[in-house]
Length: 211
Image 1 (cartoon, rainbow, N blue to C red):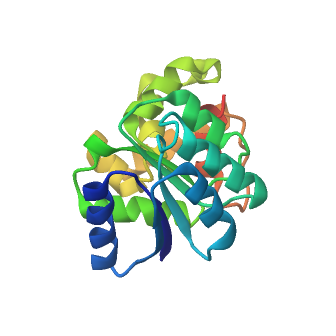
Image 2: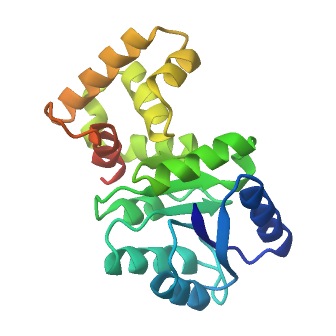
Image 3: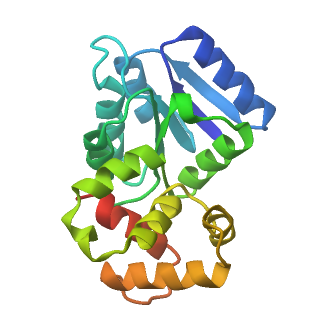
């Protein structure tokens, strides 16, 4: 996997490069500011952009705005935001085009290198991965979720993190069959009818995160 990395803190940037390279991935360029990121997103050949939201020169939402602009120019461009802050509005803006290939993780909640790399690969493949705190905040804001039970909301939050049915079942201490039933109920309540499209899970996440 070839990545663009946008992170202004030297130690974190260097550590991410080392981690990615240790897993056989390549950082084609590592930038430290919004303008550099905008340029890289339009000129480099890459599979995923790993972006800190708050970059120089404003340290507000330079990374996010560059990501949105990049996806406007290249629909479906895989982007994973890595931030210290939970901002549901940021995730909503990034998800607004409904194209998938989006992630939002919190720096201080990434505890496992393998899971982190797995999340990157999920987003690079067009999936959606969200930190549970980001998901929880957006769930509370969405009227469309009023029909879902607490158990279904918990299931959907884990789906949004990119977990498989087996992993969700283990986390919730139930069988995979029960999870499959939960997910089918969620899809029905979100009015996502059966189809041959394997991205229905992603669309379920987008349906409520995009509100």
